[in-house]
Image (cartoon, rainbow, N blue to C red; front, side):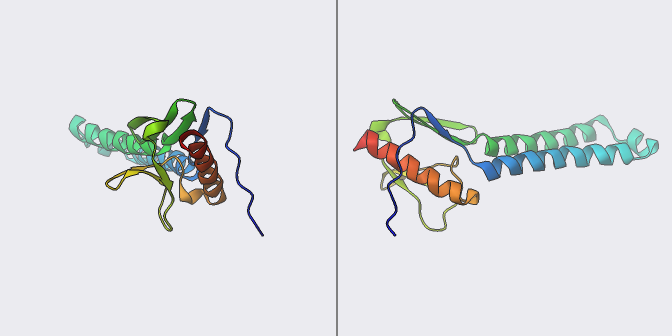
Length: 151
């Protein structure tokens, strides 16, 4: 059976990973909930023995974990008439179509990447293989958009 080519979606279009976003939400709730549950279940003597520096350390660890989960959840790929915007964690790259390069999805890779030349590869964490069939559709759509604007 021959697979029909996937049409390019209307622009602007954004691809976001579903699985990593849900995992970040769940783990964030579990992280905060676990520390709150522990604190509430400490007896008053134990709570009183925790000094401000120890509290600050625990709060910093929780905030650091939430920052990492937020970085994972905010990853995305945005296509517009002017080019691509790739957000991986807290890094944002704006690429005009002339700089996009070739879209590659290696077997077993966690996400596709843009290959600009032999030494420059930009990961596209906004399309994640943990999303299964959604990943295949997103890669085909993005390939169609890239082909329409660079070919």
